[in-house]
Length: 396
Image 1: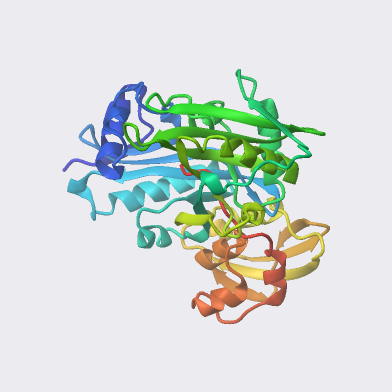
Image 2: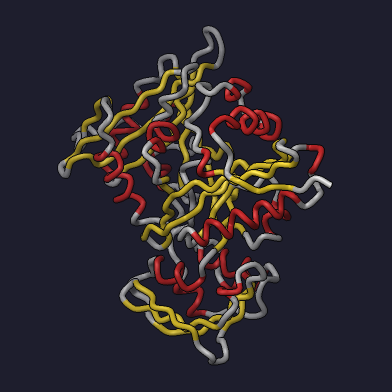
């Protein structure tokens, strides 16, 4: 009997991993070639092999994700794929469990992912944690820049990403859900898309009184020969109203041949407040899932509403990680939390799924009651994890 081996792949096994991605996710076949897709990081992967043949893949991208305005060490899980011949055998579940253990051991406090199938991840402790929403508006209806021009837009060139990164982090600090991978090529590969060769890739920055107050990375996606194009943003970020107005006014200039502007934003996207008419539409919306890996560590790392303070004892049931199965006293004051184990009776008991959805700010305790995940609401818990609706700009 041949045993299944879980290990980090070698650089030479890149092609087999990419072939499985094409088979499983309908990504472009050109990704099979080493220069046909984004950078390959074998150290992020944990794969299953049987008799030397690839059976399944998982990947944990080291990143930080903002919760309550603070960055928390996070494993962005992707590339979870199994060869069709061994699907349903349990190898995928076992491989994912091993990946989560490795991520927790490596210091990640949380993990988030985009599920191809929800029940599989719920069995691993994940629950919905926020949304990825694509908006579209006809370019002819995008608002012109204000005549008093509080920000100016120019092309971004070069390799110094520090100003873009600082702008993004300032923007993310007021939100819940945004992510940023820690690898150097995250920005060049996933935000600026510099590896893409079959469409025009461009980035611009908006300068205001305080420096770089916004930026946009986008592509011109053809609709076909002589059919024009759509402007599709990977990031549209503005820390001031003047920068947002300037960026929208810049995109309006593409309306001669361009048809639509697409970007990702919050479910209550405030960009629509600048439009004269209701021409901004949701084109696509997808819910991502989140799982807390280290309950006390995550509770101390995230931010909380500055106006809320209090103390509560919670008990989390986590079948995978024994260290999470305990009663914890959470004290919150001034936007920060402190956690300690306790033998006291809990004020609230939650499964890891329910706790993860609450921690992500996606569901209140009243909503968890409505969904059958807890027995009764808890006002203080709901207030502690309240905030703007969680969302991501990036899909990984």
